[in-house]
Image 1 (tube, helix red, strand yellow):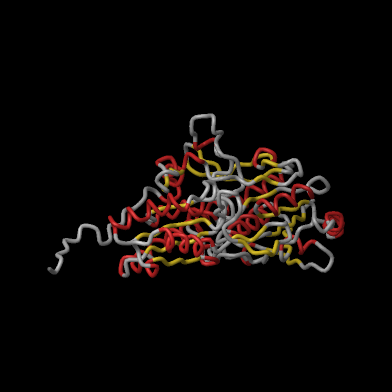
Image 2 (image 1 turned 60 degrees about the horizontal axis):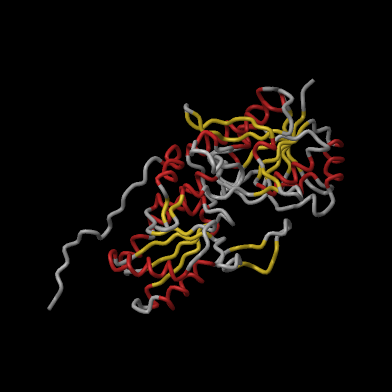
Length: 396
């Protein structure tokens, strides 16, 4: 008997969501499944929500965002898990595939206790998964969920914008702070190394304005301009976000953002040798999560989507379709949910931090091990020598 499966996309959009949907639709069609796409994330499975019947021709894997749209609906907080289960059963859905990050998966995990569920990860923050144990020698094949679909494309955009803004920084002798997303994880900001960022500040390391001012002043004397990539989730010595909205989302998260302006102001006050006009800031915002996926992101996302449907076919429920690094490259692997997600006592997912081995805090830079992490995605870091080596003569 043919199965009827459902799919939804929750949380923030990424460039690779439609690619994952494409893989799900292709595999469902090959297996003779009927595929139901629920609109606007978890809101789509509630009374009053809407759905569509999906086939592969409807999904453009080269278009970013999600055909099914999304939302940050929290079924746990609203006590509507039961309503969702009842509606899924009413629609005769045999299994559900939620595509999402830590919040979507935490809701899905609770739902999976009452309904057949299998997952695919996505997030530009790259904070879903588990690092190679710190007490062991670094082994990239032991990183659980090497990257989340959507992350490589967003990282590519961060690197691109950091690279492109160099022309302005050089032309006007600026120090420009470029702010990347990522919430409390620095994976996305670390990718700015591939755009030639001079300094990188990630949220896993406590922000020390005096130390940063010292390094900026020295490097500015040598280079005459700087690009500094900072994560939106930077905290001060007390552990408080430098900036955040007073508004909380449906999962209780503060909204970080705006720290680049705060840090620029700190540097103006701490480096009197430089005019305050030297310092500028740029928040990348939604520009880093939009547009088409890069090929490696698109192709692995399609494979991950296919694998999730195969899991349903094989009865492997409550599993996650992840990306793993092997001797053959980056390939999707099916793992039990508890192998992918660390959870606190309240059952909420604990986000994955940037592996400390990938960052050199003393130098505000990516480490050789960090370059090794990105190498299967981007290769080695290109060098940008704009303005260096000019033979200048001073007018007496």
